[in-house]
Amino acid sequence: MTTNAQIQCKAALLAAALATTGCSALNTPTAQSIAGLPPSGSVTITEDFVAGLGGGKGTLEYQGRTYPFQVLGTVAGPGGGVEKITASGPVYKLASVSDFPGRYSQSTGKAGFSSSGSSDLWLENNAGAIMHLQGTSSGAMLTLGKDEILIRMEQ
Image (tube, rainbow, N blue to C red; front, side, top):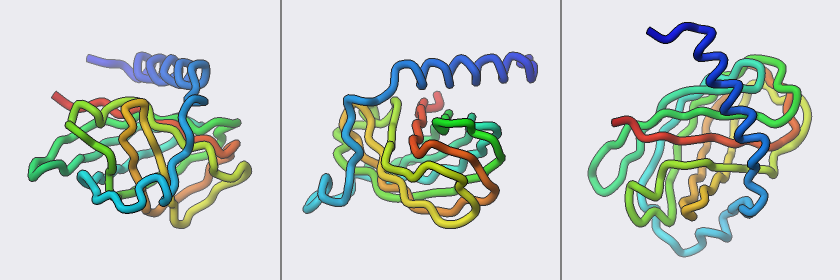
């Protein structure tokens, strides 16, 4: 059985790994990045953030099948606060399901205090898969404007 201390330790290690490796080689995608391309699939994510660390679940709809996955995330900055995010949207440039998991990054967000409202995220991973997530958030979080999430497919 996993204890709360083990979960917190794993979350801290993930946050440190994401923060030190960064995604500086990736350009933040935009609508121009996918101009003229049809979506490969769609995704839905629900994630809870506490003190800058997040975790949640989602599903990928791809070629008529549903693939569940887990989400771990970090918000760069002090991260103080609690926030719940629910988002969905299209996925582009997905050649196979194996291209979907990995680390996604966005660094165009504004620094400061984010509060409840709508969200619009463009995220890209190292395989070139692009997600355009739109949704809602509730709560508040202090951020430097960089979001990273790690997606791991469920078995």
